[in-house]
Length: 280
Image (cartoon, rainbow, N blue to C red):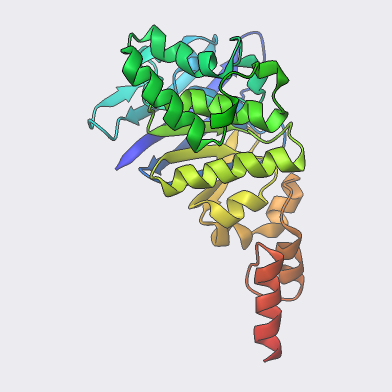
């Protein structure tokens, strides 16, 4: 089942000359982890904002094309141009690059509860969802913590928990590790892997491509607001020279494998295995 269907989408921000997106088309199947990579300014963040209606409903500009979202729980199909963002947000949860822009309550518990209270859920269900979401992201012992006191990785995991508590089956993550230290980055990526394993549909833009090469079902490569090419990690890795020309950071093991005329290797252990096989 296609849960995201992007058809010939173009978008230009108001008072700008160039288009941030140009004739972008792709789809995402239920349960997939799809990565978006590309240099800064290639349109990754703008694309994420089109997937739950923020563009074009809340951010003004020139929009054409169509984005269709299908709720995998009910089969209902919705257009992001005509369906209210409030309804779309019950299907597609968006986590931004800077988690602090999404956090404003006095405790971790209150942060997760905020949207649930706004949609009028009973207290018992709110409590159950808070407990579940915080456990998924590993923050169950931080319920009474003041969010600004959390580490960068913890703040990002809290932002993910807030979306998870809404029980959205689709998550869109816009460079969720961009501002994190190595430990925070690892913790957030561990959560993403866990969500994929539990059947969530995840679309994730990311500067560091190694995680996506290792874990994504497909990768979309952006250039100047357009889809340059897309495919499985191995298919994209076969075009490593084009990735380098675009300025995409690729795993070192992939570069070494390419120079040695070996199949794609996304991790050092994969590279060692390929070298051992050649030697034997």
